[in-house]
Amino acid sequence: MEAKSKSQNMKSTTCTKNFECPICEDREIVVEEREGEVWARECTCKPQKQINRMFKQSGMTEEQRKIKLEDYKISPQTKDMFKMVKNYIEHFKEIQESNILNKGLALIGAYGVGKTMLMCAIANHILSLKIPTMFVVGPDLIADLMSAQFDGGREVFDNKVKQLTTVQVLILDDIAKEKISEWVQTQYFRIIDARYRANLTTLFTSNFTFDQIEAKMGEAVGSRLFGLTRDHQVIVNAPNYRISGKYEKLYL
Ligand SMILES: Nc1ncnc2c1ncn2[C@@H]1O[C@H](COP(=O)(O)OP(=O)(O)O)[C@@H](O)[C@H]1O
Ligand SMILES: [Mg+2]
Ligand SMILES: [Zn+2]
Image (tube, rainbow, N blue to C red; front, side):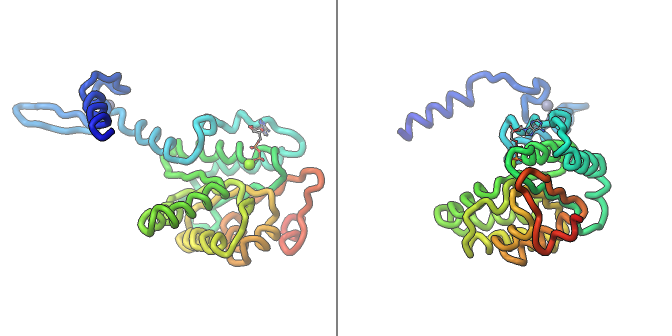
């Protein structure tokens, strides 16, 4: 088994390959000789490759990485959500460069209204600005952290948490859908609190209201999620979907 995989490796390194960039053969560096001296310079393909890498590492599927705001069909029910998202995208750079504490955005509403789709459109816009962005689905995030803690060990787990707490833009899709335990609450608190304190941009979608999120994830997480997105929150009014409780007055 070992010998076989070695020979396969050798084969792949010696065979000729179709390079995306024939100039640098995908090394992103061009080495040139000028007047007897060797110079290395960045290849012109590097900026685009960096963006492509960011897209690939974003956590979105290939399909999701193609979603644009223009793909979204507006209905009377969703026009306000669309308007806010459009406005957010148009002003994202200013928001990002400002010192405000609530740079994030929250889309709350029933399933199937296009919350995930709009978040992908936002993520794609932000990534095109070369801003590192991570898109994670709540239940997947928790499963991922659990397997990191229990199978990967301390270092793997810490690295994952560090990525989530330091990435410039974090998008949490379908938050509060996961089965909540004390452990889950603790992980969310660590991530959300660190991002809150570092004033990092955090966006999320949920089909639970802020009050329900708070009841599920705890007051500390709920109130920080509210604070992080305060200026850009939409509750999509779908049938049988009502806001209630302490945050209700903010939407009247
Ligand atoms: N307004 C819309 N225009 C175009 N496609 C939509 C729209 N709303 C939802 N969809 C599509 O319907 C499906 C469900 O949307 P999704 O974004 O997952 O909804 P949610 O996250 O609110 O549950 C997806 O395939 C999405 O692309
Ligand atoms: Mg969704
Ligand atoms: Zn190149």
